[in-house]
Length: 267
Image (cartoon, rainbow, N blue to C red; front, side):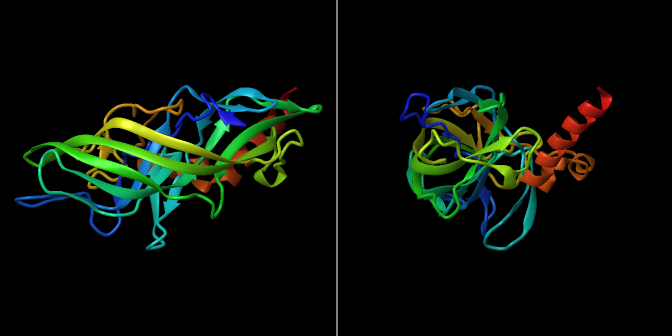
């Protein structure tokens, strides 16, 4: 299997940041510090992967609803985010024009193929998730381009290897029914990823998941590859309570199965 463009960096997505210990961008008379934390974002139109034997497959995001912070075990509402990236160190920028580096790691990747694929006489949807305990660290460099009052702006670049698992699930089935097709040697795939000169700001966009975090991408992230992303947003409180996606993969699959049964009953 290969991503479109083979070496394409489809997840140039690491600009959203949620601070762990220090929230947001901390400013002093001489420095700006972007706190370590997590990036929350949603997948846009045009995300495509190419699988050997199946060709080009277009994907869409499946919101995870909630996320457990690994350091505190706190569960937070992440709205319509389907991909989450951790930034592991604080980055302190003493002056406009300065750059700093942090390690990064993809923690969540929740996508689903827009079209099913045929294996034998059965139809399968393809889902993706992070390969457990198998995602090497990468690097992200943050540059401070301007500081106007309390608003910091700049650019970032990233480069890292990401490992994900493709789950081939029978249409209407559950994650436990997933298979790895015989024509694929493995359903675990390492890829090189990255972003070039993407823009960030400390000013929270409308309906930001955690508006005090102080590090947000601007618009669609420009990246090498075809996995466009933008800031994830927090849903209205009543919406998240009624959302099946907040319950995770299992609830999503059960919903699909229920729809299939309902169609049969109607017919």
